[in-house]
Length: 168
Image (cartoon, rainbow, N blue to C red):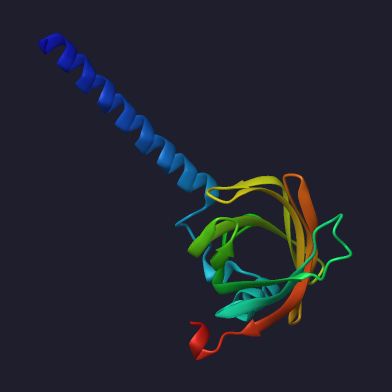
């Protein structure tokens, strides 16, 4: 019996080490925790980060194949965005969709097309949410793009509005 207990403890220790390693790998891969030095941001990146503090993305989305239906309302609260790596940005978001109801840090690939930041995800897995393909651009006080989640996809667009005290 002592030998079985010893083997079980070794097995549990090995599982714990692997879980810690996997958690560290996931945190490093997703960029959670590490923020690029704000002094190294370009003017456009700095302006984008500032413009996305305490805002709501308020708009609507469509579903392909259901164009005869009224677009559905869509709303995302953004506390802040932070550059966490080359072409990786963390959106500290409030989400109430896709099985998520609350605050979640979402790290996404974001590239610049001239003066326009664009989320460019292709079959990107967002833990706890699902796998998405998205092209979403931000310009001035508006956003617009396309989305795909499994078999469902469509368009989304709207305004970027500063949050009111009641929204925070």
